[in-house]
Amino acid sequence: MRRSVNHRLKSAQSAVRISYHSGPHKVRKDHDWNSWSQIMDNQVFNEDGIEIDRKGGGPAGSVELGEVASAVGSAHRYQSQETGIHDAAHALCLDNRNCAEMFMCGVGSSVLPDSASSIIGHCSVRSQMTKTPVIAAQSPSNGDRSHSYPADSNKHNFAPSVPEEEQKEVQCVGIPGSQSFSGTIPRLIVTCDSRPGPTAPQAAGPGGFSPDIQPEEDSPCSDSGFGSSPIPSLLFRKLSNSSSAGLSPASSFEESEDDFVGSDMDLNIHTAAPNTLVARDEMAGKAWERLRAVLQWSPPMVSCKKRSPWVQLAGHAGSFQAGDYGKLLKRYCETEERCLQRLMGDLLRPFVPGYYGVVQRNEQDYNVMDDLLADFHSPAVMDCKMGSRTYLEEELLKARERPQLRKDMYEKMMEVDPAAPSPEEHSQQAVLKPRYMQWRETLSSTATLGFRIEGIQKADGTCNKNFKKTKQRDQVMEALRDFVDGDSQILKTYLWWLKELRIALEKSQFFRTHEVVGSSLLFVHDSTGKARVWMIDFGKTATLPPPRTLDHRTPWVEGNREDGYLWGLDNLIDIVAAMLPTA
Ligand SMILES: O=P(O)(O)O[C@H]1[C@H](O)[C@@H](OP(=O)(O)O)[C@H](OP(=O)(O)O)[C@@H](OP(=O)(O)O)[C@H]1O
Ligand SMILES: Nc1ncnc2c1ncn2[C@@H]1O[C@H](COP(=O)(O)OP(=O)(O)O)[C@@H](O)[C@H]1O
Image 1 (cartoon, rainbow, N blue to C red):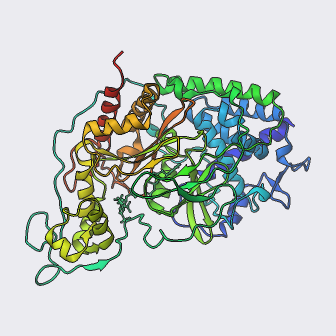
Image 2: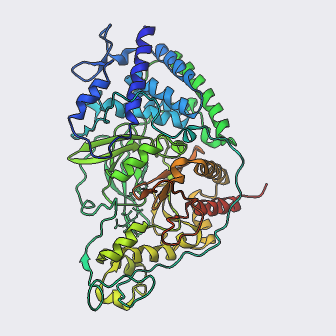
Image 3: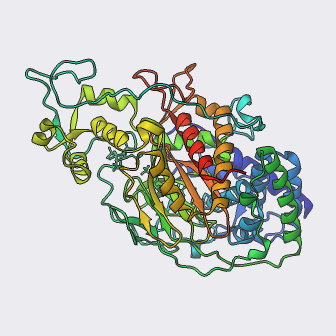
């Protein structure tokens, strides 16, 4: 039995190696299954895709819980820091899928630190990576076809190829003080004005340029042509319109399951909000001890936890589908895939949704990630778009070189402020994308504070996306106060997470070497007092050519690629702190 557990732990490790392979960033093809199954050389599957023990022939899922607990213990001993938790969780979940499923359905999510439970989530998707879904009958696959990770049998590093510096534990060195933004955001308005000027677009022909009118201009992750795609029905959760008090309807996943989650085992590390990440690791260690105990003495549970209604607060309609077991499928974007892969090996990992690779559903590829709402009960959610600029420098160049007029953006502009378009734009009934984006930035708090609220859903399900004109500090405060229903304890927890995030960002190799544009912070809390902040949306996060780096606070001037992300975070922290009663 012991041999078998160790053997599975080994398998788990090799599987993890593959998971983080950052190979060629392209959509992978079916034949990769072969290489995947080669890597899984220590594992044998029965015809239902259930892993069986080579020796015993029983399903791997039938391993006794006590044995799994030992596996957890052994794996945990490999490393005890943040990465160790992940490793242990990987080992555990890959070791026993049924048990992992049990974690997903209650035990794990209630006793594990978030980082670990998110990885335990990995196992369910990882189990999809078998030729046949393990729990085929329950799978809402809808014809899902998981791409395997490109296998590279020559790679034997357990960790992804991440610079050593990046793998170091975050040490809390104190919360840096807020830094102010000394400059102003340069106005780089691109219009169809053919008059010469330093920032005006170049005329493309005699009499000024005559750009083609396009319904949409594709940006790196634009969903042009996809928004109206029908969304296939889902077994676990369905997409539907949620009640919306805002400008536009929100997509949501309907509540569809009963709640069997044992709350007595909850370990709420979120509200505890210790002062350092190191302290959190210590807590995580304790959580593992408790997990071991629970595993050794709990009867097997076949349960499913209640799914809170899912909500999409911003972004492109039709981009998301529900995945299995707390996973979310987001329409495939190569840039985002690359970023999420890299982030899995970066200090920022606890602040981003766990990433599980690419699946195909109905001929559309999706990036699979954690549904960040999955562990909350009727959560309140807020999307805050970070940074002082919301378009890439390359989009600006593109708009100059190949200007494309956007009717849809003109219409969105008119809905908010009919006086906003210039006479020329009125006559064209269209605007250029950077012009629209800059208008949105100055209308909201993006240009003045380096972040803006995109949307809020309250616990009662009301959803408000009407923040386009939320610009002043006191307006932001009002929105935040409403979001937390005046609960200063929740605000305090958010403040703690924001400060932790700032520490991690300031040390992150990924962050230093990427221009992070259009990315959001997703704030989630619920009535249990649990509150947390994650970074989402890396569709417009561009890698800088080495050795270039950004400090994310220097004001942007065209060419310096600064995004104002940290400046915005400083301001956000400052605002949240100012809302709290002084001790
Ligand atoms: O929020 P509204 O005012 O509707 O404007 C949207 C957002 O800025 C989108 O950014 P995000 O995805 O960060 O929410 C952006 O997508 P990009 O990220 O592709 O730039 C859209 O551009 P188009 O996709 O070109 O329409 C733009 O129309
Ligand atoms: N991992 C996630 N878990 C839960 N909700 C998410 C997650 N990612 C995105 N969302 C929801 O979807 C919305 C849009 O996400 P985003 O990644 O910004 O999409 P887009 O790239 O289309 O702009 C967010 O505002 C949030 O409400």
